Image (cartoon, rainbow, N blue to C red; front, top):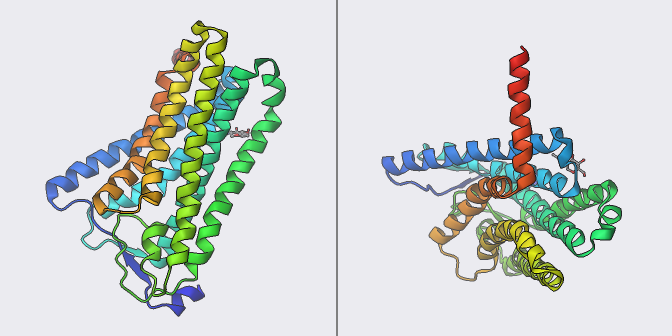
Length: 312
Ligand SMILES: *[C@@H]1O[C@H](CO)[C@@H](O)[C@H](O)[C@H]1NC(C)=O
């Protein structure tokens, strides 16, 4: 609260994505449909995993958690983006801006650790099949989920504590359609060079390191499988390519947004939209359409629904 009083800026200005009525309507439809898809698709995965006892294995429990986080991550920006489309002045209050940045990074941090956990789960299942059940027990799942949330909070806090204490005395034009650390700290009336490094290191280098670690892990898993048999290889490749696709879709925009040293507004916005709108809708699609267990569960679920309707 004190920070708001101590600085002149009490609100920030966001940029608009649309400059004509047609563009407004097009983007409205685009974001609206995708957001409905994100909500329905991800909730569908969560409920399928919860209610189908065949899917009570670590891989699906982690997947359901990932779906919840995807939903959370896009909810930090997309609803506001949709309502801002029809406002001439896109004003965001100091508090909303800070809250938005904080939750983007909590969710992003959780998602990062969940993706690592899912890779670890596949590594254990494929490379240490005999120990899979003892290693990936329910307790391990809980530990991984709790670690993900703690990491997310620490990751967000570590940047947030610096930024909330910065003096802002105007200009207050964020230059993007949402608030995020790299752009907001540039508005502070203070030299923020070292803080920019903290943000780049914390969001950029970490996502880059995680990305390469994950890709190498998946290559390692595939190489291990190949040594056993080529029949297993195609099966493993089928499962893992879905994971790899999700990893690339999530991390490529992150790396661009936080590490690329020459930010341009249009590219930044494109990559942000990929991370908040496109990836969260693709995750459920990739996992459900490419996965036999999920398809069977969908069939069972629809039979149950039809069956219970027949009885009433
Ligand atoms: C997320 O993981 C926890 C811990 O394993 C589990 O209890 C919970 O059911 C999972 N969430 C969903 C939505 O499946």
